[in-house]
Image (cartoon, rainbow, N blue to C red; front, side):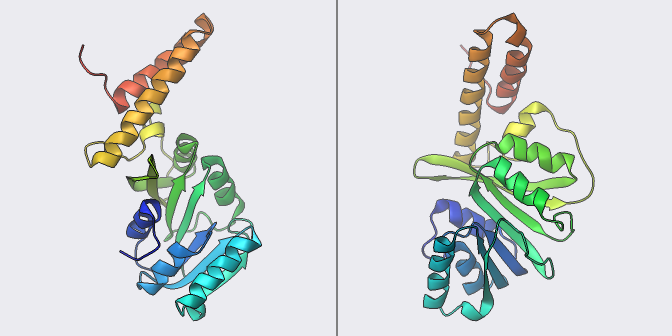
Length: 229
């Protein structure tokens, strides 16, 4: 495994398929895009960030590894101005789900086939999954990791052009399989606990909120069944 990658970045690295060009949106220090190029998973890399300081650090990281000839650096908002030619993998990680949606909605080439989207939402993952399904994307796989005591999910999505409907519990769990490993099991357990807590709060507000509370409780039961009493 390449150096300088915490468990979250390591999982993104593992899940990124071999490609011609990969773009890392919100590149921060550039560790991930440098690793993808240095290890040959991407022939060419694009490091993009909306702020100049992270991009400066990414340039320094690339220079220290002798990778400047294989990397482009873009000071830009999301994917704005990034050409789609030869772009086969896009990583958008460490942002809220609604921010990821905004980035994808704002790029005119988002619905181009042949791009693997590696997405790691920090919040509102259920909204991101629903947006993907409504807009003709499929979530090919989803895996989890634990970093600094928090469990994260990483999804790989691709555009197919076919919108799909999914039950509420899938909006929250996505393609995570709790039986796969300890990280996925913890992710499901956390979701189940959070949904039951939200449902309890809704029930306390009055009868009007009970139908929604029941929906969330049913979703929680699908995601993480309660233990027998």
